Length: 160
Picture 1 (cartoon, one colour):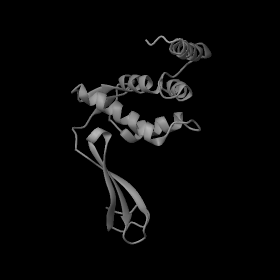
Picture 2 (cartoon, helix red, strand yellow):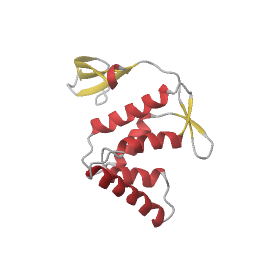
Picture 3 (cartoon, one colour):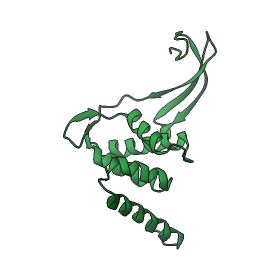
């Protein structure tokens, strides 16, 4: 494995453990040249999954792109990188479980928002504001009010 710091091609595995509910192996490596530690993941190669964008274009599903969106939405919020990676894992697994090779971007967004709603309200609203492309304040306020109603229902002991 090539070191991301010095680009030397010799590293040793320091730690190895299952990840993504056993679907991947997470390895901590150390460059034998400069000593930099870095993480790699070994996964089973899967058939490509295409995302159908709102404009009809198709592009390959990107875990990294989804994770970047979550990182932006969770900026300065108490959402850990592990939680964000777990969300991406869950969403990808839910989509792949359908057996389809193509999925609409709206479906991906809905999966993310369903999980985010239980993780952090502000991150959820930030993600929703980009995903749903709120055109005006009324749409934004409607989403916030729905989130508040859901939170109040849970606090009152009703789980829906």
